[in-house]
Length: 307
Image 1 (cartoon, one colour):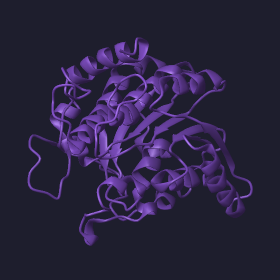
Image 2 (cartoon, rainbow, N blue to C red):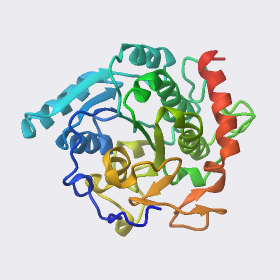
Image 3 (tube, helix red, strand yellow):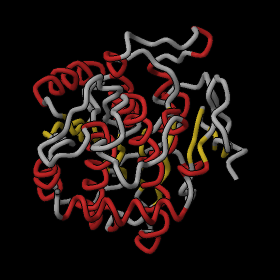
Image 4 (tube, rainbow, N blue to C red):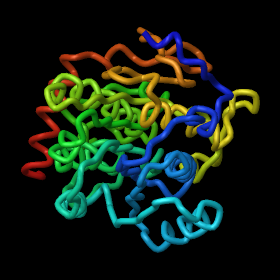
């Protein structure tokens, strides 16, 4: 279905959006002021979209936006505060939004927090930040996505999905010994399942949703892992790392496609075992419709009555 997409591993965000006109579209990019999020925001704004960067540290985000405006004076770039780990912050952000939303790009994330941490609601921090906050944000913005008539919700996942399913009985590691990679993997599997769930539950609103692996890019995400360890020939630049995000957010080439997982700008194969690496594909449990339904129900309870 996506075999006609002419982009791949080496494509950049600018390559993908060349000739694409996004004027009149409102986009939210969480964590859009650093790493691949910054390049994602820049590329979408350069294509004409009005981009709101949702950032936990808005002062830092404003500085990044000021630099982008120097190169693109006409760009429509805005900053709003959002702490995904705090559901009250998510609610405040969603309630303050008052216009159609064409793209929600769930880009922000944390990785491999070395010691078990919980948010104010008592949830494990990687699950809370990477998945649950984004799920609550999407729920809060649903009416604005629906009013855009063809909105897209895009979630940045990773090969972490190959390392852990959702731990249904213990997502917050009260019994399972905490492991940074397992917690990260669970959160990224959940992000993919959210796209499957949106596809099923919100199709009537004209909303599509896909998830993606951006690839191995050296950013602040690896601060807890001693830096990027991927072999040089398998690494991407930040410009290449943002390519699949902007493809799913803005390209007409994926119009109507939903509930899929992309890697290197192509739909990734579903796999039944991780293998020895390099790790590719998406675990079957991460795109399973029954798992998506179960997670949707569980997460809805979590965000409506935190612990």
